[in-house]
Length: 413
Image (cartoon, rainbow, N blue to C red; front, top):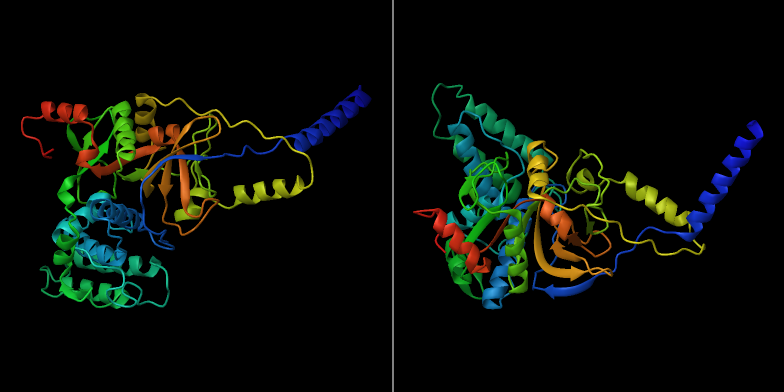
């Protein structure tokens, strides 16, 4: 009996070795179906500012779509103004508000509406007056949080007239002097004048989501901590939400996309899929926070071990069939959370004919596709928290349902 087990073990080991020589990791081959213009890939680096990088990428594409003009807008101008507004609200609420690096797309739209926009090169080095060429915000975030926590305690029993100036002074120390006026192509602008000259109107955009704990076709506040401005989203059934996304891309619009990226299928190599077998979420910070290194190192070792051996292409894995109920359960049990903002700009097919969204990320030229991710229909359908799109990208049939549900809509189509 012992000899039998030894022989069987040898056979299984040999069989495994042969299998390793004959099969490989599935390799995706993508063909572009529709690609709308985007600006260059940026890198948020060591900062929790995906909400701003993705939003301004979207705004730049909208300006390009509407005017044909390519611009590079300053993320840190938006971040600084957003931090100021959040500090004011945090103190008014006695500290009972999320004050962290993350935020929402609505935050960016409100800053643009209330303050304006500035080009990236308005002041050399603006936004990076702390010794690095890319954003490194751990110290800044800690300092700002400590400051507002102290002020919110009202140690003088009455707020001073200096605390907001003190807060803005910290921003200026890290980012540089606030660019109140600047020159572009020989003309002087304020940030608000520059916004208007570019023809960008934040009121032309609608925020959409899909959850069953609120009525469909009505606006609701998305209950995530980063939505500190308490901005609304319109609620659609998931199939109609996806219809808007496909309609937008196919008609030349891009999409500002909020998603959970902690699933196994969101890789460091430019892929976002929903395989049938799921993996628990990881903790950490931004790119490594969501994708990790250990898994990629293991894959690299396996690839090296197969070098020189004949392999056959493995079939692409089957993906989950996504339902409205699955989305709601994942949101309610915290397996779908408010993780990352990105910019969808195109559609593609894999070699088996399945659909993918082409996504511009803000991690620099990372991954196999140099900063671009391919997100499957299943992944987007399951893991989309919300997205922002131009109101004209919404099909008329869906607009009619939104109008019919409300006697006095909060958004004019």
